[in-house]
Image (cartoon, rainbow, N blue to C red; front, side, top):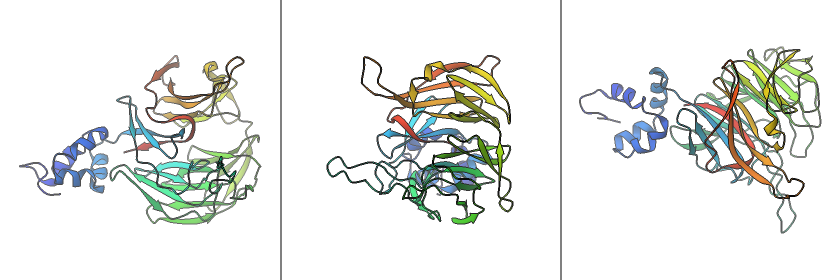
Amino acid sequence: MSGLIEGLPDAVALRCLARVPFYLHPKLELVSRSWRAAIHSPELFKARQEVSSSEDFLCVCAFDPENLWQLYDPLRDLWITLPVIPSKVRHLTHFGVVSVGGKLFVLGGGSDAVDPLTGDQDGSFATNEVWSYDPVARQWAPRASMLVPRAMFACCVLDGNIVVAGGFTSCRKSISKAEIYDPEKDVWVSIPDLHLTHNTACSGVVIRGKMHVLHKGLSTVQVLDGMRLGWTVQDYGWLQGPMAVVRGMLYVMSHGVIFKQEREAKKLVVSASEFRNRIGFAMIGLGDDIYVIGGVIGPERWNWDIKLMSDVDVLTIGSERPSWRQVSPMTRCRGTIFGCSQLRI
C-alpha cells in the first residue's frame, strides 16, 4: 500500500480515500494495485471512523433468492448485493443477525425445507454456526461456533458483545440457555439461563442499555440486568407485533396501527392499515425512520396468487406529523424477510 497519491504520505492519502462513499469502492480498486490493497485493508475502516465518514446501511436477507444478502444505502436510495453466504445449509432461516465492529454476523438457524422428491428435511432445523461479513474485505468468514445449536432465538449486541438466548434446539425443543460472544477474541462464554421458556419463537431488543427477551404469546419480558446478576422477569403488558427501536424508544405495529410503547403504557403514532394484509415483513429503525421491508401478500378471495414483495416503506418519526413514503424496492431479494440489521461501515 505504497504511493497511493503522488506527493502525499500514505497515511494522508488513506484518509482521503476514506471519505469516498462505500458504493464507489469497487471502482476505486480498479485504479491501481495499491488502491485495491488500501480499499480492502482494515486501516481503511479505522480511517473512515477517524474522519467521520462512516455510513449506515440496512442489511436484508429474504426468502428469494436463498442465502443472499443486500445492503441498502439510505443516503443514495441504492441497493448493493453481497456475495452469497457460503453456508452448507440451503435455505438458511430462523437465524440471528446483528452487526458489531463494522461487520455483519449471521448466527445459528438452519433449514426446515423439504426435498420435493424424497420428502426428507433439507439439513438441520438448528445449527451453531456463525458467519461474519467484512464489507471492507467484501467476503464472508466462519467464526467460533455457538456453544449450543439454536434457531428462532433472541440475539442482540450489548457493550460490543453479542448475546444470544432461548430458541429451539435441532430437535425443536425450547431451551433457556444463554451465552455471550466477544468478537475480538472470537470466544463464546455461557451466561445465566433465562427463567422462562415457551414453545414459540423469541426475539430481543435493546432499550436503555438492557437486553429484553420477548416470547410470542407471552406478556412477560425477561431483562438482562448484567452478566452476573442474570435475568429478571417483568410483566410490562407490551403489545404483540413487529417491533423497531428508534432513538432508544420502542415502536410496535399492532392491528394496523403503530404505537410508541413505553414500559407500561402506549401512545398511538400513525395508521399502518396498508400492512394489514402483508405478513413476513421486516420492521427496523434507522436514524429517525422506521423501515417496513418486503413480506408476502397472501391470496385474496378471488385471487389465489401469493405475491412476494420487494417494496420498502419508510415512516419518519422525527417529524411533527409522522408520514409514510416509499423508497427504492429491493433489487434482488423478495418475499418473507429472514434477517434484517443495521450496519455501520
